[in-house]
Image (tube, rainbow, N blue to C red; front, side):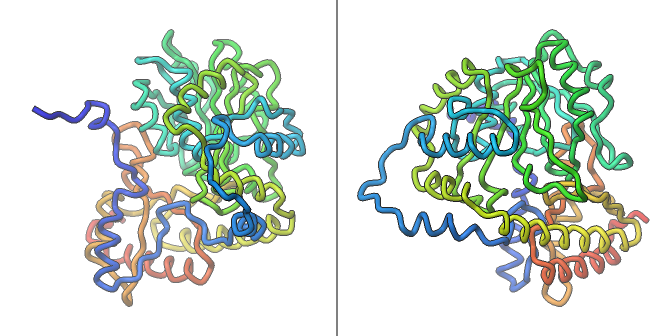
Length: 399
């Protein structure tokens, strides 16, 4: 009898995409759907990247080097050096998006039954990748009342066992928008060193930190240079999610050599994506300044609009372009599906990502959603108006 693998059954559906069939059905009925569920910015990709693809003179699109193009790795190292992060080409492995970077790093460092600790809520794909390698997730819970700050270090220590191999952070955080401070990371480094753990740090949203706050990279934490593994991606920084170019960055060359073996699964990173990625590294400060200002406007509008709705709580994100939002509903997944199946306001509705998929502990996030403020202000205004009306008439409203 044909069977599906246990791992395949155990991997959860994406909370970001699982409601797509309902959204598609709504669109077929003629409903305008505002997508607040996914981090797909409507910001224009830098023209310099588009031009590089248009003007490429390749006569054959060949395999690239398994570790990624030499020129891209060298240029990316220079990008980090300009940020005060002293790494070199040999510290970089180019991957097919940031997701592959995470998967390869887990496959290279974790055995079946090993444990990793992650502050929840966290980017949902980490659950899937841990399951794929047979690792167990243990969590410490960040709370909306504290704006999702890093939980006390003592809470991390309570979760450490002989099977613990590492701690995962996302900074700035997806899905909360929280930005970890240097002091929080320095405290974390102490237990990384004490227990000789890996510190996996997803810093994809580094370019977008707000309110005068600066990003601090784990690569600059002294004394744990061999323990730190950085995940990067071009997707969000340059609004080019479809090029699928990311990177594992580490001074631990044994780890990178092992990760490269897993690269046999894809032979090489995307050839055309790397051309766009390399060109993107020449993007001007003017581009980022305009994008930064646009995200600030979107954030400030969205946070104010949400907090003006009775029963809604939205912390002010300090980075990235997401927030976890508490709603006065009985079940955010039921509410999100109801929005797409049964509700519209003037022929419009919104698509949200239920937050329970970003928590590992059962029952948490039941009345929360993740909202991505990646739409232009005119669309955000309409989306917030639709959401406000929906909350007033939703039959499962709690307050």
